[in-house]
Image (cartoon, rainbow, N blue to C red; front, side, top):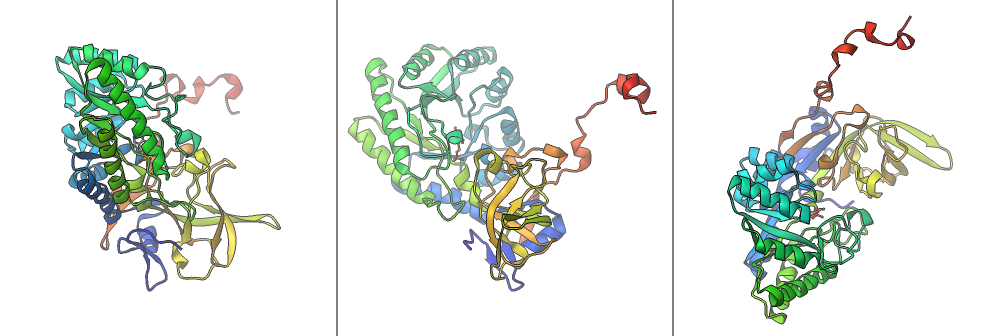
Length: 449
Ligand code: PLP
């Protein structure tokens, strides 16, 4: 079994992460439980930074908060010297509540509200990444109302189809995001910003998708962007000082995923940008990247307790755990694949193949089809790997399941960074209108005898 980051099998034959026995963590904190390996998150942040330091010092790494954002994550990202990309008022609020420096925050999103933009402008965030014409006008109005200039990037769809699941492709012409290059919308948007009194155009952004292994897709997008920059310079004289090439670097979920080390990726991208700028005789822009998954994905593990099972002779054995699509919707959404092990029998030989089901009322609520496991029994702890990105951040209360707690583990200590939801939390926002307050109010046909 491939062990990530600080994982190891300890003398008790249990999986250990960050020096903590996962079986003990499950006993102490309950399951399902998200466990985040702090040293691995920090190592990934550093790999990006150091990779660029070597190849292209004028670079900035933004952590894409949509992958996993909590106040503790904001602190780690801040301490590692990364900037932050947020995509909603809620993410911005989280960052500000964690005292993340506003001057290192970038704000994305394809339908930011007036209220969200106002919050961003008032907080003095570094850049708003404008996605569409409606937003240009809305932001200009907000900037006017606040009597403040706002520095912006424009999100461009470079017309590149990344090799990944169609739901996480974003750079193709037919995308809900950004200004198209082919249609001329990107150039038109740039001109509109250049005419605007309050919007200060700093450069451009593109993001072609997520879980991408093929670096040539990023380079194809970069090439298209340089082509656009050069055309715009010829037409308007505008020289972009910033070029954000997005996130999207893939990680290893299963054996077939051959991921690239972030430091190598950064070095290659730095070299590529230099070469492109030189070929176009374009002044070297500041490069920005905004990785999410490749920073937190493999640092996260979800622990579950095995409960019921169902053997269908000649077909398969379903083994059910105490979580599922509520804490990890990626399997139901994208048919995502995961690796896992029975953490309480981590050293035992593999004995059979089972399928891991969640506890939600959906046949699609599966976590892993066909997982090889040792002899197991109810009460064993299952560890599902690489759940750090787009699990907690996409979690729901479907079936009114409380969301799990999250622990940050490092060198033998474990700290709760997200409390487990309680049943009281599930009804915290429910209201019973006065007219339903007594059963007398119910129409006759629904009253109990
Ligand atoms: N930037 C933008 C605009 C995105 O939409 C995303 C993810 O969808 C990211 C960055 C982060 O991508 P990833 O987590 O694949 O690195």
